Amino acid sequence: MSDDISQEAWQGMVEILAKEADAWVAEDGENAELEYCLAALLADRQVGVITTEQDGFEVFAVCNDIFAWALADLEIVPYTSLIDLYQHWRKDAGFGVAVWCIKKRKVMPQRPVAQAIRDEGIWDLDGMGLSPNPYEAPLETNHERKSNL
Image (cartoon, rainbow, N blue to C red; front, side, top):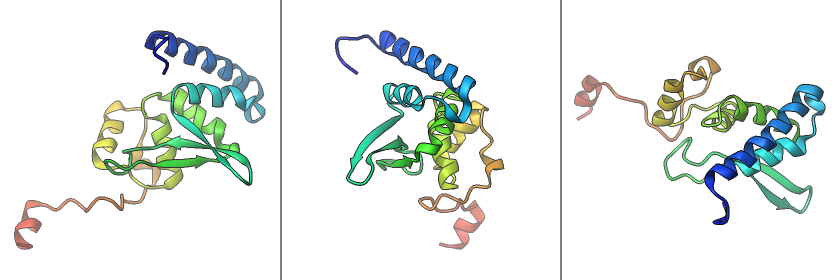
C-alpha cells in the first residue's frame, strides 16, 4: 500500500471494487466481468499476477503459512476458477482464499490454521474430505510417546 493513502481509504477502495464485482457476479454468474473480481482481490493483496511466456500472465492465490510455517506458497488460479475464489473471499475475507487453496489441494492446513478456521465457524474443514497435512507428524498420545522412548 502506498504511504500516500490511509489503510481506511485503501479498504474503502477495495470495498468499492468488491461491490462492483458482486453486481456483475449476481447479474451474469459465470459470465461475469472477471476484471472486477480480479481487481478487488489484487487490491486486497489476496492474489498476485506473474507473467508467463505461453499465456501472458497467470493469477495466483497467496497461501503463505497455510500448510506450514515460513512456507512462501502460492496456488495458480485457473481463469475458470476466479469467480469461485472471489466468492470464497467475499464469504470470509480472513480465510476465504486460504480455504479455496485448501479445497483445491484437498489437504488439511497446519493445526493452528485449522483451529483458527474452525473457531471462526464459517467453514467445515472436517466435512471437506481433506488428506492429512504432509508437513505435520500425527499427534501422539502421551502413552504412545512414552512407549517410543
